[in-house]
Image 1 (tube, rainbow, N blue to C red):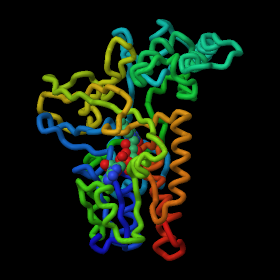
Image 2 (image 1 turned 60 degrees about the horizontal axis):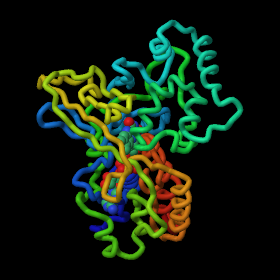
Image 3 (image 1 turned 90 degrees about the vertical axis):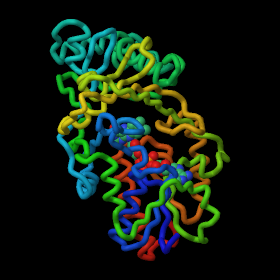
Image 4 (image 1 turned 120 degrees about the vertical axis):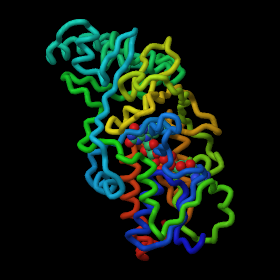
Length: 385
Ligand code: FDA
């Protein structure tokens, strides 16, 4: 351990935030390991050698938060661009703005609607089920936005995302589908938004640059676990079912395959993310990375795109989105009971808690854990993490 007072497994936002806080605020030595050959977890980005464009290796990352503490904290390590995300969907060779807003509705139904007229029309179209409760995802979506918008923008996309007919998916997969009865087309409503000016990886380089932090890459916790001295506190941000050797069963995740291609044009689609709503198109979205950084000069004359394909994750795949069926929830409940019986180990982050966390939530929960667990522990007010 090289004199470290704590071992942190995972150099993503959860692990890096805790490492930085423990080193900076408490003056303790920290060892961070990650089994990947790089820091940054899923937010890792790197320049593409041909185009110079910054690739988001594990899917597109857009920073947004309304949490002022997280925003202030992150500003210690980066400045942000003025990027505001806008999303679009291609359906039958037309491009519509997302989330569904008044512009989408006017374009789709081919006439002008006032907010009140649009609201009345959607209320009428979504009343198809009458008093009956929705019994599957399709019925739930129809009860929220009506059949026509469902069939255009949700049906094919959802079927591709889940590789399952929406009539076979449980209604509770969606709780709400935002429809905006105005022309606001910014994707996120958050107060603070932007992309890190020097990329995501540079944030982690700064967070982990502290003299008291040592980072070792390409090290799997399960290869060194038995070598750890007794009683050393550990923060574990890997998959929770793997930690317990799948003793309570496997938790379900979806993953994404991204097929990269360099296109011989400076601009392929004019925007960073284009959804493809129709089932006939096999991918769910096309990413064009240069558009995440419109403030940068891209001079190669080429552009890098990525086609996203969604599927269920096997054990060897990268777990991306928790599926969180009732069965998964019961399995996770059994792991929580096991976690409670472990000594001197703290489980955190999206994999360690089987929750989809945005970056600001991963950072926010690490800041909270620092205050409620690690500060008291290192100041002697708590016996164990
Ligand atoms: P993260 O997964 O980043 O880090 C965990 C680390 O632990 C990994 O580096 C892993 O290698 C390591 N590890 C696991 N097991 C190990 C072991 N046995 N030994 C050693 N190391 C081990 N958020 C957002 O705010 N805006 C966005 O646009 C997006 N977009 C997005 C797209 C996609 C496709 C995904 C999957 C996720 C997003 N996110 C996002 C979410 C974002 O990626 C997420 O909030 C952070 O990655 C969470 O950080 P963690 O540290 O919890 O996990």
